[in-house]
Every structure is written in structure tokens, then in C-alpha cells.
Image 1: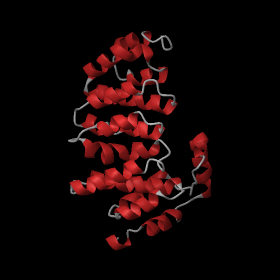
Image 2: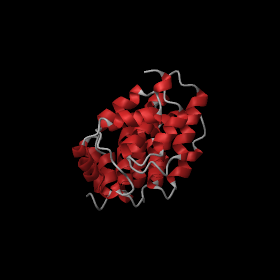
Image 3: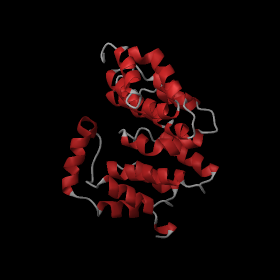
Image 4: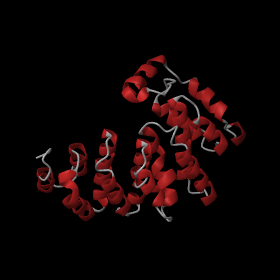
Length: 240
């Protein structure tokens, strides 16, 4: 496929050809209350990712057009192309900044946990690796739950490089969040940080275990030894 053929319209045409009516209902059931405001083509995520990889050289303006589409799978295709571009070693700093800026200004269209989980680590986290992290703390205090999720999920890239400080600090900011999916993210990313920095995780739990939501705490301690796990669970009234 030539670069000239990697347009938003060509992507949507090929994606639509892979749609299945049965997949539409599956997607609605999966989204449940979050389906409001989303339309679905009925394309499997594996097909979305496969097609996105084939369109890896799509220009940024066409990617932005995908992000403005009302269909979930089209927008997911857009962030997937962004993710594939951000993962490329040859992507230069100017291109990384353009991807980062597009992602940040598109949060009003990225209205499901799948979007930050797909793209935030490399599009946001990788770009910010050697830069100030202030924007993540701004996102962590946003009224938009998906901006808050981006703040935490972006730190996955830092964890891969052995840096866990941001994960622990942002997780602490989100302990009182009112969204269940945020608590799941807090627990999951604390668990991942603990694989790299168990001492840091234990220090976090020493301070916060008693105040954490049950689901966040159980996820956070799930990879610790049984005795250690029970120690922290017993510190929380709802899990003891």
C-alpha cells in the first residue's frame, strides 16, 4: 500500500467491509452504559488493529479525521495508528510531539477506557519520558474520567524503563476517584509498578492500604507473596 493511498476514507471503506451485524450487538453489550454517544460498525478489535497496522503511514490530518468519526471502531483505528507510529524507532521528535498534541486535544472523542489503554503509554508516556510530567498531574485532576485514566496509563512506559515514581504519585491522587474503572486502573498499574519496584509498592501500601477501594487493593497486592498480601488486605476493613 502506498502512502498516497493511506487516507481516512480508504481506511473507513476497508474497515466497513469487515463489519458483521452480530458484532454490533456484542459491542453494545460490552459497553453497556458507556454505549451512549457511540455508534458501532461491528468489527472485531483484532481486525481493527490489523488494518491500522497496514495504514501506519497515514498523515496526521487523516488520523484526526478518524478521531472525529462517530463509530467506535473507526476512532479506535485512529488511536491504533497513532500507537503504531509512536512505537516506530524512526519516528522523530517533531512527529512524536504532533501525535502527543493530537491525543491530548482529542479527549472529548476518546470516551472509553480502550482508547487510553491502547495509545497512552507510547503516544503520551514515551513522549514525556525526558520531559516535565506536569500535564499528567493536570489530567489526574480532570473532571473527565478518561483524562484521569490517561494520566495513570501513560506511566506504563515509565515503568518499562524502571521509573515508578509517577505511577505511585498519580495512583495516590486517584484513590478517592468515583469511577470503578479508575480503581481497577489504580490497582492494575500499582501491581505492574510493584513488579519493577516491590519496595516502592510496599511503601505505597504502608501509607494507603487502609483507604484503598477493595478492588484496587486486591489488584495491587495480587503478585506479592501470600503473607505480605494478607498483611495489606487485613489493614483494610473492606477486605479483611
